[in-house]
Image 1 (spheres, rainbow, N blue to C red):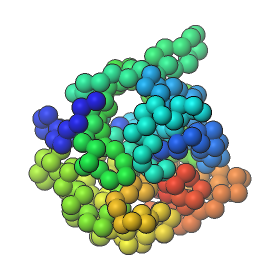
Image 2 (image 1 turned 90 degrees about the vertical axis):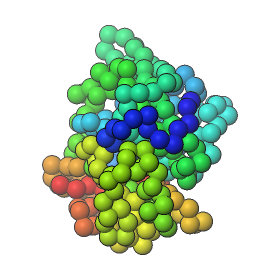
Image 3 (image 1 turned 60 degrees about the vertical axis):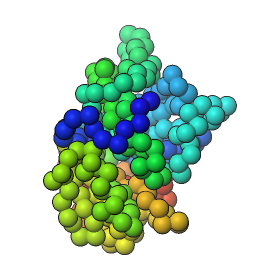
Length: 270
């Protein structure tokens, strides 16, 4: 896997997917996200040892990533990060490492193939940033997987809490070029396709997202929240009410605490 600190050429950021590290608790996390109203794909198993379930949206997706019993020493670098949101992944047309993951489809299984190029590990605290190129996007963005009981249609915000937003954001400006960042209250943001990546001071995260996100006890950067677009807030409200999941209002809609979503605050906005 290649470590890079700059994109090979000027490209526009576009969110591909987000990764939630659930360690050895894949079954528990999958059940939890099912109760939250996400339709998850069948369990997939990577050739390098990790396993996952996905929630597929319009142009991006969410990945619950973990390991099965006895496989915790495979890809041990992944599990060095704390449980919760640990991956910010951009779409790429240039990558140099091929992975494979069998996908069960009507009529038989096929391998979903993709390539990854990663930003240097010491550049990102408590997580990873990388580019992903899908050789077989038709095995990921399938219409039958894109309907969710909570009404989620797209990931529209990805939130990083940082004591020094400008310092954290400098990495992305090096990757994508000058003029990427826009100041916002408590930090900076940039567009990434259908999504906006926000890098905010912890106090600004707490204020903006109704204190639903976790905080890093040692003051290090932490990826903390994901916001989804819905046609109406009625759908997630109905799902959460039926499942007995607490939610609270925030400036953009409603949000579920990280305590109820595998260490990630989940917001829903119409």
